Length: 392
Image (tube, rainbow, N blue to C red):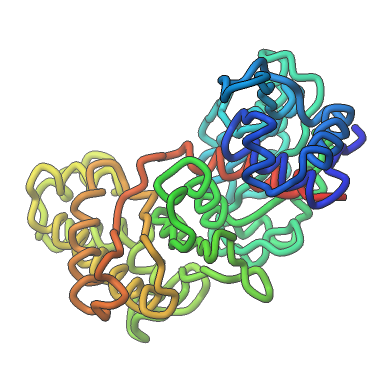
C-alpha cells in the first residue's frame, strides 16, 4: 500500500482537526485555523484528491449560501493491537477513531512474540473481512513495558520480547505503517482523545495492573522524554528490604502494587491465617489472583481490604512526587481491578491531597478512567494517526 499523507503542515492541521472534532464546514475550518478562503479551498481540494477528505453534505445555514461539511474519507481505517501478558485485543476504527469492530481473547504473551503477533494479525484480518476493509491506513500497537524504536526494551513482564522488531513485523504482515509504544502512553492518548483528559492540556494517566506505568500529557502532547522512557515508574524504589521484583531489584513500586505483588501479599495473608476467605480460595484452587482479592475485599474481609489499602497508599506516595514535579491539571487512574477501583481511589486521593502542596492539588481532580479497555484501543489508533496525519 502506498502511504498517503498530508503534503504540508496546513493539510496536517486540517486532517487532525477533522479527526479530533468530526465533520466541520469550510467556514468553521477557516475560522479555527485562520486560513484564507482561497488557501483553505486549495488545501481541501488537494486532500480530497489524495483520498483523505470527503464531502459529508450541507452544513447548517449561517445566512447566505450554505457551506458544505467536510470529514475524513471513509477509506481511512486504522487498526489497534493491545498486548497484555495474558490477553490480546484488537480493533478497527474510522478516521475519527471511532471503534467499528473489536475482538479479544486470552493469550500467553510471556513465551515470545511470534505466536502472539501471528494471532493478532489473524484477528485484525478477520475484522477487516467482516467490515470489507481492503487496506489499512495504519496500525498502532501497545505493549507493556519500555519501547524504543519499534522494539520492546528490557520488558520484565515480557522477557521473550527483548529487542524483537515488533513494528516491522506488523508493518510487513498488515501492509501499512505500524507504530509501537508502551501501554501507559497509549492509554494516555486514548484518554486524551475520548476521555476526561480531552478537556485538559496537562494530565497524568496512571496505569495499574500487571505492569504499572504512567503516561504524561504536557501542553497537549504526549511527553516521552529524551530516550522514550518518561513515565516508567514501575521500578521506582520504595524500600531496599521490600519484595523482589521481576527486574531483579527489591522494593520496586510494581513489586508491591502490581498484580503479582498483590497476589503475593494475599498468599502470605492466607497462609498466616489472617484471611479465612483467601485461605479457603487458596485451598480450593492452589493459587490466588487479584480477582480473588477483590472478591474478598468487597465482601468485607479485613485482611484483603488492608492489603489493597496498603498498596494504594504506596501508589499515592509515588503520585505525590509526580504531582509536585509536573503539576498536572488532573490525574486519571486506569487498570484498577473490578470491584477495587473506589477503595484504591479513596486511599490514593487521601495520600495525594494530604501530602502535596495545596497550590498543586487545590483544583486537581484524581479520578478513575471511565473508558476501561476502550482507552487502549482508541489510543493505539491515535498513535498510528499521529504518524499518518503528519505532513510527509
